[in-house]
Image (cartoon, rainbow, N blue to C red; front, side, top):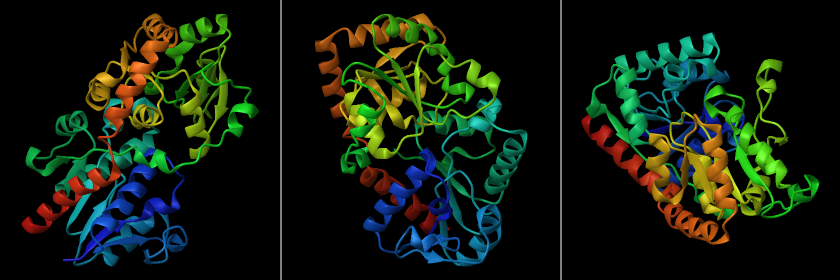
Length: 348
């Protein structure tokens, strides 16, 4: 049986899911040359060696062209969705956000994702996710047998291959070790509004709270952003690495994640992490992060101020972060996924 990867991600804007799909696909193809990436027209320009299929793009390509191209093989879908009509497939579902944080998505998006994931499971797709927390969430939210849901890690070692773009620091007027970084968005579960107390305390100390990420939204949403803070919008991988390396710490106040990649990326770059005390971040970060209560802005501020105020504590956290992040490589992630694929292959 041939092994195919759904390569729709190569034509999509880069986000966390697309990062996961790209790094995992690359590692899988290094592990086993039988994995063939199938893409919409134009995809081979972004992924040498990919096999272009059909004439459509987007969801139409995934639902109509992809199952024909993957007929007779096992199809691996890395980004939450897959073609309903594929006969044998595996889907990576990263989280249950459409069930647990519905306010973060449009009604149309929620209805489509719920319908699609129910149909994929009903038609026999095996599921794998990126944390034990997310596995338990999937079992609560979707009608799938526990034996059909696996767990694989993510990786963060892609950060080692990125050359930091230090110009971002001078362009934003930032001094190394004189700012606190947050990576997030306006989605309610990212909980940026809880950083107001921290932003004010940092301002009193002459240090900015720097927020990187997609912050486009309604006037109501932007009015809830913490002030005073420095909002720098989307940044490149090279700029993000420079920010991680120069920040006093990363604060990650999210109330819900399927995995939580930014804390691991920060640890890989030697940046101490103050993260929400939620189950999935405990699972991912273990004892390498300082945890805070995301429901209490004063607790977030107190924990961050304590970390940035102690050079010895920051150094301890840097070393713990380096050790923890070494566990999470894309090669290891691909090996776990490959085992899951081969087991599914044998039972098909």
